[in-house]
Length: 301
Image (tube, rainbow, N blue to C red; front, side, top):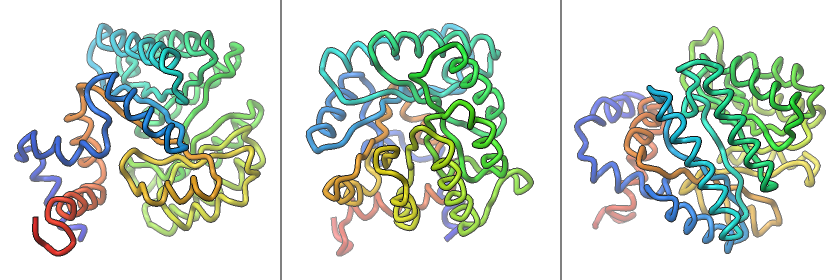
């Protein structure tokens, strides 16, 4: 299967955009803020909360970074106007981290302070390992500046994460813990399926001691069961839009709080291709899922 997954990734640049769009449409709200609003409204109606992400990362100019910053201000305005139960997630490289630490730090503080003025919350996403130290530094600086409406993401895949949890303990952080999508060198990351799972469970145990709130981001039944040992008032499950919705519905029926990650924006194509190229296993999953929806379980359209 791994060979097939890699073959799918190599073919991605030749796949027509309409085909990629059809596959991606299940996992991305759309290009416009109105699309994200409609998606979140539906999720709220089904008993789920949301986090909205403006697509755009690895920006190449300060103007692009400022444009994404302004887009988040528009998101907060829409959340308030429509009474949505949603916060936001931001990617440091979308706010200019590759252009310079200070560029990103200033844009991020603008977003977090605007959120604070409306009683909202910002989650700083974690990207590949080259951004980890700077992301955690920004999080600490914002918290030490008195901004408590901000949280961070940690990846169980990285060998450093358990140390990072202990280092953040004095802040009583709000943390989203995920396996991590980025394929990293074995020197700095766990690579085996079982060892990543085991690291995730160890991270959950540490977060139960040191975090104020835990976002358990997973679609893995084993890890969902492991997370249920956390105090109910201090954690929530988090899932991606369009991934295992039947599992999400079951969690809600069982009385768990579930937050759905809702990305939107004109950068949907680059986002979709990047996610698949970064993790060939996801490419295979998405391809088989798309074929199943296009042709049905019996092999006929």
